[in-house]
Figure 1 (cartoon, rainbow, N blue to C red):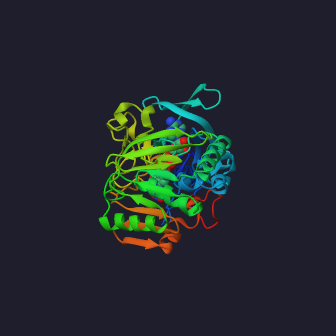
Figure 2: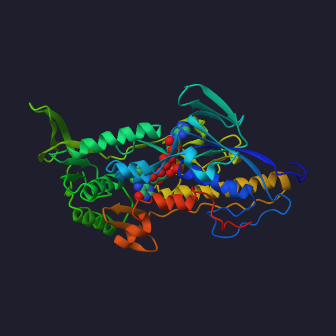
Figure 3: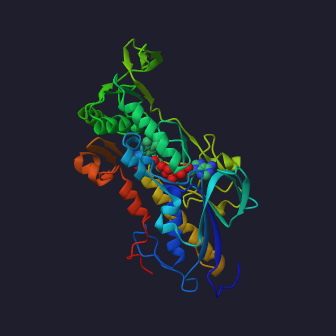
Amino acid sequence: MGSIPDTAPVVRVFIAGGSYAGLSTAVNLLDLGDGLSPRMAREEYTHHPSVPKVNFQITIADERDGYYHLIGSPLALAESEYAKKAWVQFQDLPALQVPNVQFVQGSVSSVDCDAKTATVVDSITKEPATHQYDYFVTATGLRRVWPVVPQSLTRKQYLLEVEAQIKALDGAKDGILIVGGGAVGIEMAAELKHVKPHLKVTLAHSRDKLLSSEPLPDECKDKALDLVKETGVDVLMSHRLASSTKVESPDGSSRYEVEFTNGHKMTASAVVMALSKSISTASYLPSSATDSEGLVKIVPNMSFDPSTPNATSHFCAGDVAKWSGIKRCGAAMHGGHLVANNIHQLVLQQVAQHQPKFQELPEIPPMIGLAVGKNAVAYGPDEGVISGPEVMQAYFRDDLGWGICWDWMQLGGRKSEAKA
Ligand SMILES: Cc1cc2nc3c(=O)[nH]c(=O)nc-3n(C[C@H](O)[C@H](O)[C@H](O)COP(=O)(O)OP(=O)(O)OC[C@H]3O[C@@H](n4cnc5c(N)ncnc54)[C@H](O)[C@@H]3O)c2cc1C
């Protein structure tokens, strides 16, 4: 607790994860540090007259070498041109090319919350390096399997990975079977049929409603089914996969013989498992910080639950946070904004004896936006179920939300209307 500083205080913020939650934290912190309103704020931010600026020294660690628009995966795995757009290397994000932001490509392997140090294993050299911080932000999301999400860590490797998949699916003369009618399977099947209408695409789901594990009204699930069928995808409801066996033909080609538990059989050139098994990435945190599923326990201002040492210096946003609501990228970006706000308030408390005004995360009711070919279906407590091409435009535009996220985070550079 010192006297009011003459120069901008220097505050080290370490952000684990450079995607929606992590980058939103970083860009909003940069605004606050420069004495501006955070770019995602709806209302003007009141800065402290004695601490107009803060020198945030931000380190962003990510296993990947760039920002990957995860939502775009179903299209990235179907169309080469889009795949190129979906992954932007960190060095090509104009908004973050400033001297006080440093990117580290590597995997965060452990965090000592007591000592306030984070260890990162470099992706290339595999050497560990330890970073000291004043504030730590967990924004590493959930780990998802191939082919739900590309597994490459560099843009170069990723382009090869998706190209191989696109080629394999392109030549699928016996059609493609997508297994799993959750959000990911629906979007994968619909995008594939939309981009490659010549392909026979089948979506199989074990239950009698799509999106069966989501707490959504039946009207939303039924509308999703109507829209998938409208794209030309064959839908098999109440079909649980029993086996899929690869059979080689004498001409060198291969296909899969598939059987469901209800006895139905079919063949397909490719079987894509779109069962969204996702697991926490936060194994690098002390066990006191996470629940039995590895999700990070937070309080409404998004700092860690008090059971972890220095809890108020540790924050979490995005999918890996234990909070209500369906995991969504809008929630991840919003969370990053609140974390930036609350870190700034704590800095003011420390250097200017300011009474912090935290922004708190409310309970989030179930809501969803789902792209289904040319249409989208959305549900929220206020609007109810809405669908159609205009919903697609509002929720995803024509690039599965790439431009919406890019613009919301202003990754191309801060818009001039940010106000001091
Ligand atoms: C196929 C698919 C479609 C989706 N469609 C939609 C949609 O239409 N609308 C919607 O709102 N949501 C959608 N989602 C959900 C949305 O993508 C997530 O809610 C969002 O990605 C969460 O953002 P995040 O920043 O928390 O995590 P992520 O986007 O997962 O980012 C985490 C980052 O952390 C990095 N990382 C992980 N572990 C480590 C580590 N140990 N060290 C360093 N870095 C690490 C990763 O490389 C990654 O860059 C979809 C998800 C999938 C898989």
